[in-house]
Length: 131
Image (cartoon, rainbow, N blue to C red; front, side, top):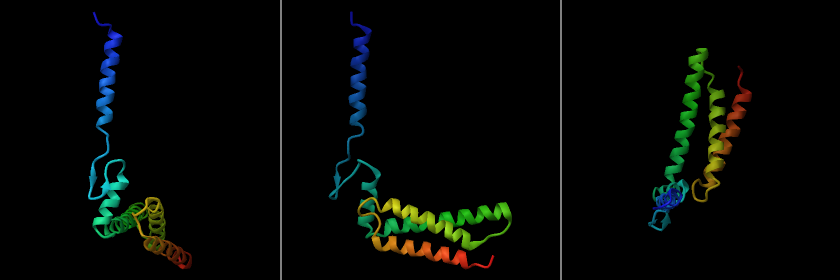
């Protein structure tokens, strides 16, 4: 008769082997190793679109934060102060760009410098606003 502990160990090892084989990396797709993390898929998408995918995703992130914060203030206070939301969304986007710049090939340094300039100009606009 087979011992229950041995049977449990054998089935556990079979499960572990099948579980780890499910997460093996995907094959190379057009010269890009896919599957070890999400950055490879994003770099591949950015490469085949000529650098437009991440830029458009960053602009969409900026617009979502801008419109979300504007409508939240409109809902709570009944008015909108656009320069505050523009500064908040530009700094959130600058943080997003800083995260994206850690992966080589995701965001161009030119675009990163543009978003730094946008953040500086939004702060100046916020400081010079009359309200």
